[in-house]
Length: 336
Image 1 (cartoon, rainbow, N blue to C red):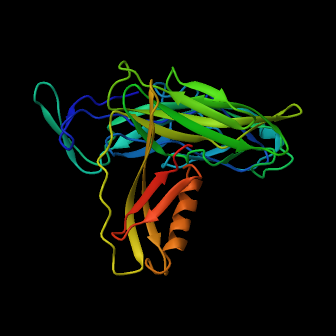
Image 2: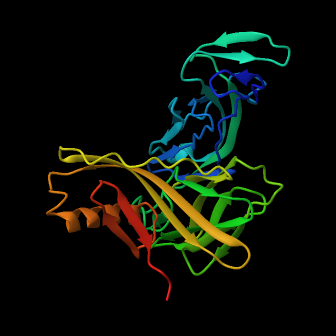
Image 3: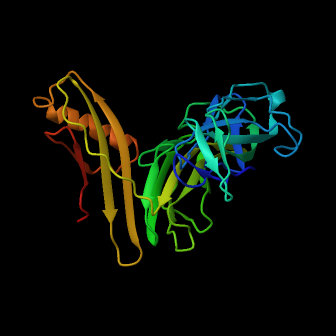
């Protein structure tokens, strides 16, 4: 691991390393295609790339798993293989961040150096076990392999909360030919998992003063199921929880004269209880392309937006309004 501690000229503070998350063990059936997109969140907005460890400081027995292919954009791909490849593999990756332009770095003595966009600012290890299990009767998600359902957040979703506010992440999955047994997750040490029936889970976390303000915390999860003696795992999803770092919400663009509308949508969904307070803010950037009239086909457009928001994890009882200035207003139906 290497952390750059000198002050950057573009943000006037030291570099922040990229952040990611993973489960200790990732599983796949030998006959099923699986893509694992690692979370690549960088607090400074830097370009993030992944590579295999290449020396004794980065890996032990630095031989990449033969059953996985890695892209520089941090996506791992597994293709169906023979039973002879079943077993466990050590995955030892490095995640690097690169500035998007040439910048200078200043150390405590005032010495200044310049680095380009091809120079790595920091690098962090990403290590886990990849287990290839015996073939599944079917690779269709939702049968033996668990499939996520709404309101499960999409991979890469971001949540914004303050100190002493509790976040709830609701996760739902189904598997018709196997029995969902558990939710596997990685995240803050005091995060609590609960279940309200097969395939229904909730992760709760309340950041305290000891959790650094304006910090970002990755949370990753997968659902596991069993059928007879076989184990099946869903895809991996990861989200980011940003504490005390509520961003500026951009105002919507004016309505264009063409049939294409670009809108930045801020969706505040807040529920308050005595102690602690529960809060969620989802920020979603959407591009709406349609040949329909924003005036004459308002109901159809609102329904299409609502369907997409629900697919991305919002509650099904939200109300969507398309305003005359091109912005979208979203409200959660009040509980009775």
